Length: 270
Image (cartoon, rainbow, N blue to C red; front, side, top):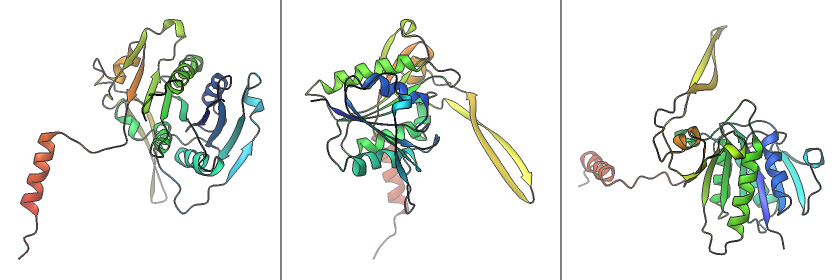
């Protein structure tokens, strides 16, 4: 019996990246697509608390390049990537078995500390914290990205993962150079680098108000050292970064200093 995958993203239900991924997976798996109706880049893991999230089933046939071998359904939600993932798991599937969540393929890399704001990674985290192994996939280009390489690689990763009965509960962040697969030099297991992009902010003043428009178009990659995701994709390697939503630090020095702060600022009780 075919395994079941939940596919989501943050670029929106009509984004070519998600359908390139779906087309690479339909020969092997049952697919549920649950994605935002529109682009929600930068939404991280946010959810629409106390807001109604309208969801509709859509016809996936205009996006499919060949007849699926297994079940394929698709839904678009008027909410965040996190909403879409949660709705797919807890409402559409009603907590029946989903074997793997895959978020992507995102247009543009999600590397370094910028993964904190990534809606692609954020959606995968919502699967992971619900005890479903999850993968976020991004292509390292915004202009004319080559999705096929990332789709082919991700399909192989999913098949390998789900064929291994000893596979652990994981959260992976995969970034793929926007190159033909023949130009990829290999794959590296990496750690997160530092800031990868800086914001350009356009400021406008009108009627006593100030508006700001953010774009991320200043490449930093200042911490693109060997072993980091930044270095890997900048040198034609696919980066696979095992990550965790656990934001706590375990550094002894930092813990010791934190205890010192507590000791020096505690309220004396008599």
